[in-house]
Each structure stands twice: as C-alpha cells, then as structure tokens.
Length: 376
Ligand SMILES: Cc1ncc(COP(=O)(O)O)c(C=O)c1O
Image (tube, rainbow, N blue to C red):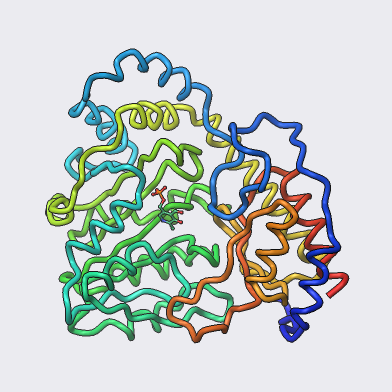
C-alpha cells in the first residue's frame, strides 16, 4: 500500500468545490449499451463494454417463442456449464443472477444462535439475509493490504459457525486472495461447515482463472459451493443469469428456497456468451487496460488504492465519501461509497469505490478527481 493520506481536510471546502466545478458532459466514441448518458454509471460494477452481439442475435431469434414457458430448457445451459467446470450436470444450479444463490444459502442455513464468518468490508448480500433470519455475522479483520488473512478468518470459526463466506476478488476492496493460501484454508474448514466462494469478478483478474478458481474443490468436497455470474465479465447483468457449482446435497438444501429458473432468454444469451471466447477475452482486456490506466493516474495525483482485480477500484481520496459521491453526482458521475460492515462507523469514511467504465468515462471521472485533489 502506498503512504496513507490525510483525512482531515475540511468538508466545507469540498462543498464549495462541488458548486464551482463543472465537467463537460460525457461523449462516447465507442458503441455503448443504451442507457441515459448522465449520470455516468460508475457505481454498480456493470459492464460498460457491452456483451457479445452473438447473444443478441440468438435472443432476437427466440423472441417469437416468448409466449411459451420453456421451463425445462435451461438444461442446455446447465450441460454447457457442467462441461466447462468439469462436473456432472447435477452439480450445477442456475438462477436469475448469482445474487439469489447468496440469499438462498443464507435462508437455508441461518437461524438464531448460528453464525456466518466473513471478512470486514465484504459483499453483504448473503450476510444481510443471514442476519435477517436471526443468525449472527462474525467479521475477521483484513490484512494490511486489504486482502484476506486466513489465520484471522480461521480464528473466527466456532462451534456455531455454519458458513464461511469468501468473495474472491473481494468487493469492494477488489483484492484477490493468494490461490494456495485460499485453497489450503478451504480444505482446512471442518466438513460440517459450508465454504461459500463467490467468484463474481474472477474472470477480470490479471492472474490465471484456472489457478485461482475453487471450482475443483466444489467438485471434490461436499462442503464447498462456488458461484459465478454472467453479469460482470460477460456483460449480461440486465438479463439476470448466474450459477452455482456444488455437491447435489448442498444444492438440494439451498433449493428449498429456489424461486424458479432464470429466464430462458437469459440462458440463451449465456450460452452464446460462453461460446464467444474471443469477445470475452477482448472485454477482459479492455477492463484490465482501463483499470491499469486509472491506477497509473491515481499514482500521479497521489490517491491510495487497494490492488484492484475486479470491475472496480477501492480508493482513498482523503475526502469524506458521502461528499465525494455528492460532488461526483452533481458533475454527472455516480460512484459508490465505502462499506462499513464489521468495522467501526466512520473508519473508512474517506474511501470510495469507482467501477471501471470506458476510457472516456474514466477520463471524466479522473479530471474531476484531479481537480478535487488539487484544490482540497
Ligand atoms: C461479489 C458479488 N457477488 C454477487 C453479485 C450478484 O450479482 P448478480 O446477481 O448480478 O449475479 C454481485 C453484484 O454486484 C457482487 O458484487
């Protein structure tokens, strides 16, 4: 991590800056998904580079059959995913995005007196639902570089632990776990505790997908579940499709809370997206090069950040995150704030998260950030 920045700048100054700064509206030279141009959406980790035109063609062909349920035909996609992951078909469960899998798991395992163990400042879709059902959440501190500290995580496990939730790369920090440490940890968790590895952003990491995924552990152990989504690297967020890889007995347990299959149109899109490896590689390349560019610009203007391996960068501007979000929004850019799950209120107040968008979108964000940093 680079040197820490002062966080004691007067907020009043930032408010004054908000009213004095105006950045020219974003004009894209690249084809973009159809969305309103303002605010620029750098808050939800959506894929600004779009999805494969082959998925669009396939979906258009299907439109005339839209009055039929096609309930069972998601089995085509299940077979493709099973082949990709090297598991039997009954190890795959598809849902409308991977979010439902996180929530179904919480619902299936939570009850008063039991807990889920995770890191502070992690993704909260599973933990919030777990708490809503009366369970507890135990948070382990992050390492110095905002990554996983598996000894600390292990120390939080007790006789009431039902799930250990790991998001890799993590959201919002973006840090990727060391694959050997991660796998050693997963194998060390007692077999009556479920290890949930959320790999929503793994396609976008610089490091090898094959080496970092825990999918093979989901095949060889009956207490591991890995989830994937087509929302991020594949750019299909709006169609809602994702899947889990796990032993059928885990899938049966969480399926008590299954609310029905994903839309068939989303399944068609996902199949095409999986086939179009060239498009995926290009899309990942765009993510990685824009992410690297933003980090280099952050270095120049003295902004500290956690090592990003996902669709976003977690950074410390030294400016209160709510004020920074407001200032950005007033200038046509939506970013996300810091996360406080498991940490003392206000302890990451001057951190925020920006999603990776197109290069012109990031330039718009960076010019505002540079102006704010120079004047604050
Ligand atoms: C870490 C992580 N997991 C899962 C999800 C769920 O996404 P989806 O339901 O679109 O698959 C998200 C969404 O942002 C996420 O950040």
